Length: 80
Figure (cartoon, rainbow, N blue to C red):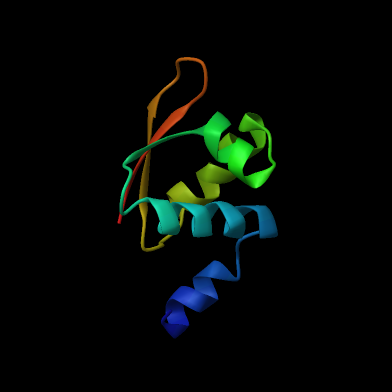
């Protein structure tokens, strides 16, 4: 991780850092993620994931996050 990426990551809360790490790890093989399923993996509620994804979406990180759909749980489109 570059120094600027490390500095940017330090502005995230621990929950946001966990979500970002999860996305980095899984985005190479998957593009769409449901908040509910991320929450299940990280022991968070779908609402906690959705609330914290906004910080990742608005920040300058090595992943692009776009809110994609809302059926049964918000779906996020993620690309590296």
